[in-house]
Amino acid sequence: MVPQYDNLTVNSKNTPLSYQKSAALFERAKNCLAGGVSSEFRKYSYPHPLFYTHGRGVYVYDVDGNRYLDFSLSQGPLIAGHSNPSVLEKVNTYSNLGQLFAGQHELEISLAEKLQQYIPSAELIRFCLDGSTAIHTALRTARAKTGKPKFIRFEGHYHGWLDNVSWGLTLDPQAMGPLEDPVSIPWTQGLPPEVKDEFYLLPWNNLELVEKTLAEHHQEIAAIITEPIMCNSSCVLPREGYLEGLRELCTRYGVTLIFDEVITGFRTNLGGAQKMFDVVPDLSIFAKAIASGYPISALVGKKPWMELLADGRVIHAGTMNSACPLIAAALATIEILEQPETHKRIFELGQQLMKGLREAASETGHNLLVQGLGPMFHTGFTDAATVNDFRDASTYDKKKLAEFIARMHERGIRIIGRGLWYISAVHTGEHIEIALHNARKVLEEMEP
Image (cartoon, rainbow, N blue to C red; front, side):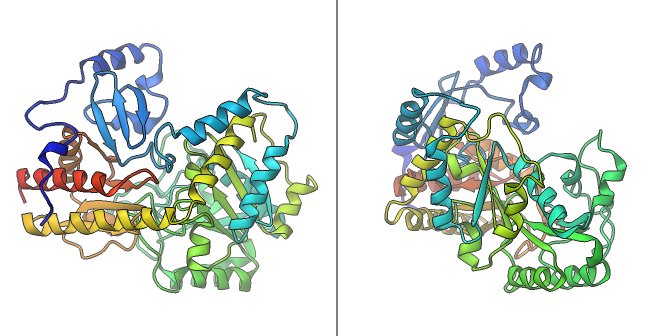
């Protein structure tokens, strides 16, 4: 049984939260911001887009004075928590020397050397601003290296929002086609229909279909791009031997293996999932947790690929790339994560939370599936014993999850709306117990 922490609840159930100021600001925002937001996914916050004033450690505060114990960590980047003093100090110190030089500065060498030290595939590095642009650069580089036009990607894997990866993200079993020959469903309007001819779309965790596709079409396939853990959809781990199999197939057929470590990088460990699974891709993308919320990403890779960038055969550019505050934030984040036992503690706390949620669900009669590693994991309501790919996620009860997320929010526990949780370096055992106490109360209130 979970200990009782009634005196430690973030917000009491008997005092409903007020969102009046956020509601007024949202109405005002709709007159000047398209949809009232600056990112599509903020539109779906409970009960509507909220406006925040500040964050400290594991807590974030909104304009109505509500405080939330934060397990969303701003969609993952805040691995060092909100407003980490060490990060802010290094950012402020370096920003006082300059913001952007349109030229090189020594600190970016220091950061690149750190990445080389920890990431197995990082023989050379280029810095970008976000995951989408780094992924675009990786695909361009793979085409140039192999001389081939297409790539393989997987259903439910999010690689940014640019045109040629904005397919296969819609979970519609009636429209997705057969497992052996998936239909590429556009994620948004405005996509040129011919863009879907740039890739082959496959279900994930099915090595047999990857091998079959490569055997038939390897002459035109430049790359396979994959999340090494399918974090964006249900936090699915690769089946045993799957990543190793992708590596072997790519080597056999002269195809570039690209790991999208936007989420797994720095969160699993400083070397990413590639170090954890001991599978070295040719190119990788690191972002989100790399700089505690500052906009920077890194394309890292082996020299035969990265030398195409080095000699200008592949153009990569960006006025704001490696701006001084961004590099400083990344170095400060690494210093925090280098501290002994940091990642071990993040894993342990996450696994403690996962275990407690499973126990609370079992004891209250709910079909809550909890899966993932611990530093990040997913919760959803389903009778399935496990979710192994994107299509399996269709078994989740979306309405029930939405109720759970809303009730947790009313108790001051902030979780990403699709059921994804993140643990930071500043969460403690007490925060885990607070979350479990509130989750149990919510599950007791909900109909099984």
